[in-house]
Image (tube, rainbow, N blue to C red; front, side, top):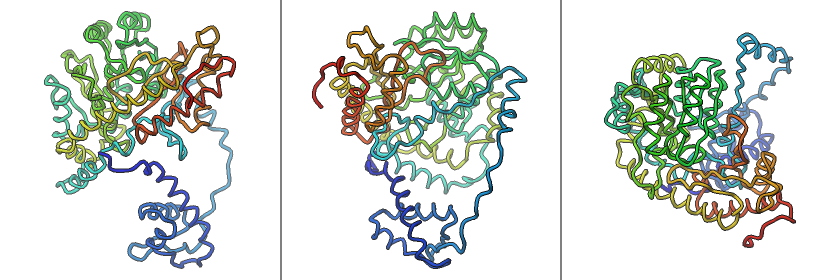
Length: 510
């Protein structure tokens, strides 16, 4: 599992720096003159051959050099083409808002809640905001071997069946439980794409969509981009609250609920056994669908115990549209997922996916089939379960020691993050004036980045006004427990920066 060191996180920075050095050196060469060999550049700059290759590729993309296989890299014959003059694009403001004025449905495409977990922080910053596994946790060798084997399969580069490879659909169906068949599964390109397809299939523009509160910002962005209206239903330690769910269906007439019954993002809650049938009953009575986003089932910790089955496994009436993905347990670029549904809705899901993307790339489907069928797959999941538990334990211990002011109401036994509540403000026991409300949340997030830690503020997880300030800390995107401990030490310094000295609680020295 540990196939790359933490230095891998700085690879992009090394490529950028080397490209800068080479760019400065280009004036020493005449147009068409050969640059030093890759081996010479490796020795001169003490970088890897991969870094050299990527830096040269960057310069080639800029039109500064030309690479010739077997011959080397040469300075380009002329300067790169100049970009055209800037025009007047102000007319676009009217054009882009015209559809909203016509149908009275605001369609804002706000990706900020998603990009906060996708953007790579600067070198040296502890990545507590990441939404994917650190390279050291990814099964890179197994994925590479699976991709190589997949490329040699007959027809691997041809057109796949529109519903997905039959063998891969069968594997997804088995993983969902005995009641789901391969005929009820569609292979999709990652969880985000599958959620987009589901929401487009189930709710028209302007329609209300019930969502957990708090919930995944990427799902809120999907709904809003489609012109739908996310309506919050609060979540507690046992998942979405059935009493409030029933009231929300009655008040809004909604026909869709989106929920994460297992290790909910961001709270980590698991839908209680007594609530599972109740949620399905309430939705069925309302004539509504439940979109089950089962995004981290394969990120269970090794102290979790048996997991509940997906909701779709106990739903003979076609209430549930299930979304499951391999991405979280593998790599951000291993974008293979599945949609499962029963009844006429399956054909609508299929039609929308075909219109949007035709089909997921066949080589990636073949590679997924090779990966999940290899002995390396169960070994990877077992090792990952142990590693995530170790990291979760390290983070909770460090927070208890250095930042006891941050409330941690629930420690999940699956997933990759913790959901922390900041003090409310003046009048609380610790007098944390600087942490008051959303301003304190924003101030703490900004101070953390100055201290060298990227974390995720809680505001984007709420579709309406948040009841309290929160932050989310991921423990999967960092290099290991040492970096977790150092990151929390830095967070303590950030906390001290935003908290007035006169009300600062005494905690162990750093």
